[in-house]
Amino acid sequence: MISGVTPVKDDRLKNVFRLISDEIYAKDLLNKCLDIYPDNRPSIKTIMEHKFFDDIDWDLARKGDQNNYFHPLLDGPFDSHYFSCKCAAL
Image 1 (cartoon, helix red, strand yellow):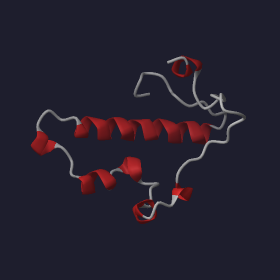
Image 2 (cartoon, one colour):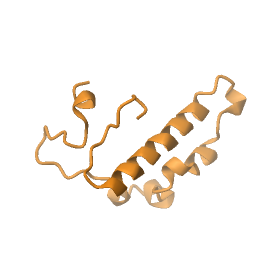
Image 3 (tube, one colour):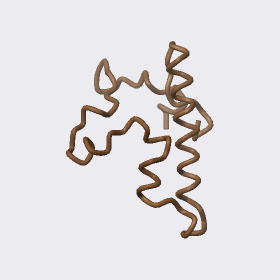
Image 4 (cartoon, rainbow, N blue to C red):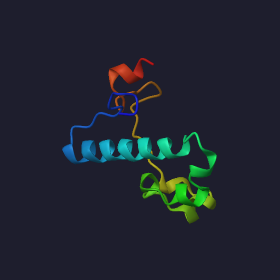
């Protein structure tokens, strides 16, 4: 949605809504980080507390634990089924 196209396809409606809300939170965070006035930009602490990062366990991330991140199940090195055709062509 940041690019104007839903980047991920999923047949389960619940997952589609989650993905859309993630995109809304991403857009909000980017807008705040790109504010033309540096004093208005969020601190690292504020960024880490942003709704976009709700799924991140920062203590595990600091330790380098990768198990708390999304790992797509791929059918091969060129599997792009998580992306729409328009985005995959970019």
